[in-house]
Amino acid sequence: MRTDLGKARLLFWTFFKIGAFTFGGGYAMIPLIQREVAERRRWLKDGDILDIVAIAESTPGPIAINSATFVGVKIAGIWGAAVATLGCILPSCIIVTVIARLYLKYRNMAMLQGVLNSLRPAVVAMIASAGISVLLSALWGGAGISLAGTNWTLAAIFILCLVFLQKGKWNPIAVMVLAGGLKLAAALAGIG
Image (cartoon, rainbow, N blue to C red):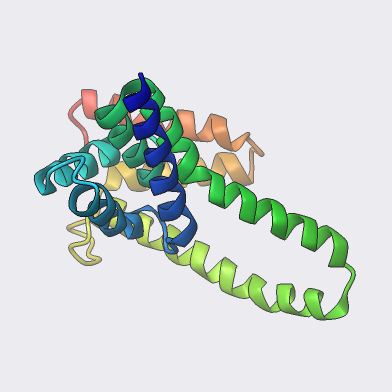
């Protein structure tokens, strides 16, 4: 029991450090996880990191949290999964809480409003870029835009969803469920 507690403590601090010093999303954490878990601590072999990435990508949720959970289970069971996951997300929770408190305190400051106003177009552009990238990948599979290569089933579902969102004022969650159902029905029917 003492050994498991020691491993759990080490797991927590290892993933706390990874969560605190990784910027750029879950994929940026993979090299740090490999270095800390496989090379430094020798809890897993280098080949196990590929399994972690494969499992973390194939399960719902952020890859960083899934990776931490998987490593935690392998090292110290359920408690290991819990503390590794907590260690991974806690730094972000702390940072967001501090930033939120600072924002609430200084939100009326003209300089802060100027900074936030200048960031809004960049955030909108990043979200639009991601959306366009997903749309291009879905409709043309990354093979280049052409009429012959268009997935017309997905194009029809996309247009129908836009109509329901814009004209019908449907709830976005209902539209996502509808889109998933339509795609499933099309796949079962052998269309697209």
